[in-house]
Each structure stands twice: as C-alpha cells, then as structure tokens.
Image (cartoon, rainbow, N blue to C red; front, side):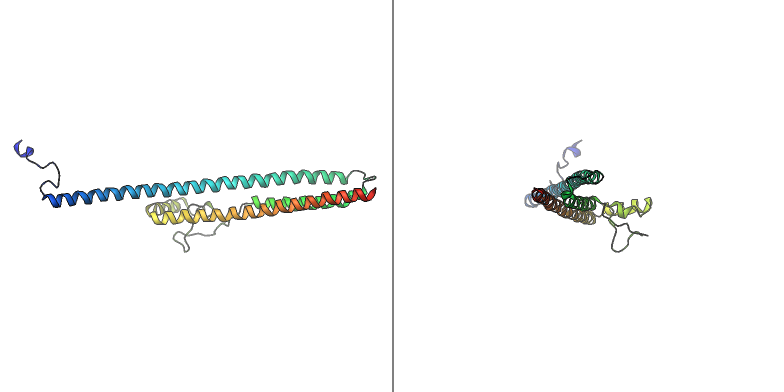
Length: 212
C-alpha cells in the first residue's frame, strides 16, 4: 500500500520541473495540431458535400428547363402539323410562317434533347491498376470491373487519403464538364427559340397586313 501511495500521479512527475513543463507544452501542441487537422478534414468534407449537392441541383434544373422546351415545342409541332391537314381557305399567306414555326420548334426540340442526353463513354476491357487509373466513383468506369476487383480497388482508395481526395476532385471536375455542356446547349436552344419564334410572329404579321 505504501509503495502504491508513493507512485507518481503523472508519467512526467519524476522529471525535473523544466523538462516536465517542456514535455507538457509539446503534448498540448500535439493535441492542438490534431484538433486543427480534424477541423480541416471536416471542412474539406463539407466542401465536397456542398459542391456535389450543388452540381446535382443544377443538373436537375437543367433537365427541367430542357423538358419545358421539349414540351412547349412538341405542342407547337402538333398544332402546326394539324393545321396543314385542314383546308387553308383564305389563310394561304400563313403557310410560310407555319413552316418556319415547324422548323424552329423541331430544331429547338433536337437541341434540348441533346442537352438531356447522357454523356459518358464506357471503357472496354478495363483492368485494375491501369494507366490512367479508372474513376472508382463513376459508374461508367467501375461497372467494367468485377465485384471483387471493385471491392479491392475501393478499399485501396479509401486507405489512401490523398488518392481519395484526388478521385473526388476529378469526379467533381467531370461533373462540371457535363453541366457546362448542358447549360451551353440550353442557352443555344433558348436563344434559337426566342429569335426563331420572334421571326415567325413578325412574318405572320407581315403576311396578314399584306393581305389587306
């Protein structure tokens, strides 16, 4: 009992005061560095999560806008085609504007479909540890592996923090390229429809005025 009572309470209790103080200071610094790294890691995870969520939301918005253009123009195409099947007594002057409307709507639909069209290329005969390495976070790549190969490669990626971050960065960049293409095509579709529809309306008014 006496020996146990005389044991030092701290591992550094037997050291001189100056060395013990220095050791305690080093331990505190190490704890602070550990906390900083943990906070930085959380910040990086939040950045990745926020970026991926924003990309997903922007992709959904682009698809909704493209679907809106497709719906509007398919209705216009249906109306225009049905008008061709009816007798155009007294309305022959509107034939050219109707043909223009049909062309504008058709081209707008095609561009909008290209905007929503899936854009990726499947790799054939992919082997693990190929150069360049495959993207294990993209289904177009990892579905070419067997389940065992994918499991092994993903575990190796998880164990390598730098490699994991690089893979996530590459994945975000690839999503950005897809989004850029979608919105570029959507811009072309909206601008073409806006200009084309204006031309159709103006030509229709000109034809109606000319008939009077």
